[in-house]
Amino acid sequence: MDSILPLLSDPTAWAALATLIVMEVVLGIDNLIFISILTNKLPADQQTRARRIGIGLALILRLGLLGTVAYIVALTQPVFTVFGKDFSWRDLILVGGGLFLLWKATKEIHHTMQPEEKAGLGKAATLGFAAAIGQILVLDLVFSIDSIITAVGMTEHVPIMVVAVVTAVTVMLLAADPLSRFIAANPTVVMLALGFLIMIGMTLIAEGFGAHVPKGYIYTAMAFSAGVEGLNLLSRRRRTKRPTTGSTVAKP
Image (cartoon, rainbow, N blue to C red):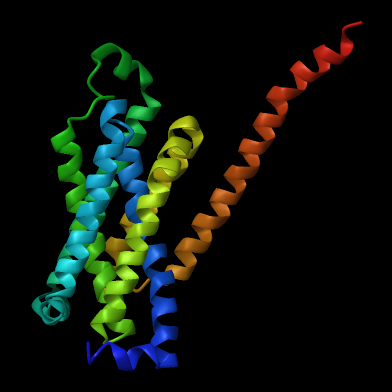
């Protein structure tokens, strides 16, 4: 308690908390998109439970990693060198997570582009509950490590990190069902989200190899693409309403 009370009266602590909450929420978007796409492949009665378990695991992993901050910081220390490039455990985790995202997103795009395979085999559209949770857990671990390392770089106060992480995961939990329903109801949004996952995967791989990619560029591109797709959705809805309205007016 003694370590928390001084923070309550420190303006810089509140500023760090606000900034970190925004950063954690933004980083959580990547995690949430993957969870939404994956759980939408489950039977309807299992989707909400899988999303809650996946987001709950994200919270547990993040809080658990906060309890080992010293170890997490040590993950950035080089463990071996290849062709003059130092690689740390964090680099290897980012590269592995990026490759997993590329594989998963490419596989889902293939299934989306080949609907006849789904109809003929009846296997591509289904996913076991345990398999879904396992894949969510893998990406939760990657995003959690990236999230906590980002938090450690912004503040040294663990209580601030805990509040920011819990707030971000709460936002993820509240947004999970609406986002999943929106993605399921708009097939073109699924393809856009899979494109986002490919971009995120490439970013993770690039950072794993030491090429820093400013997050602002990534999320600006995602926001611009989402805005364009939003205009397309609005345009399609208006076009579908016009014939009905016209035919109603034309009747005597």
